Image (cartoon, rainbow, N blue to C red):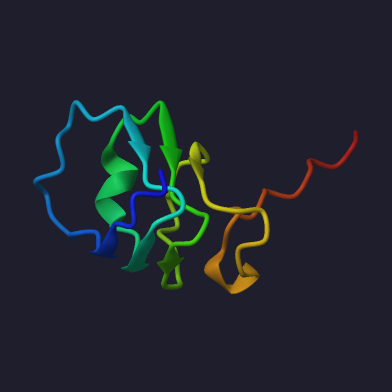
Length: 88
């Protein structure tokens, strides 16, 4: 958090499958959010703040991956919610 990390996150299948938490909030990370994050069983994931991730975000980005509530809507975040079921 706030460590002045810059650059991009790698698109790789080498993400540690045991990884449970990612806290990269308030750095200077740019580029895309790797789709491989959607394959991890994360308990905590915070990516927003001063980072500059490119759109679109991965469609299957877990709800646990908190960016910011004011993230651009064209980034599809938060993920669209399904319409409510009609009442009988």
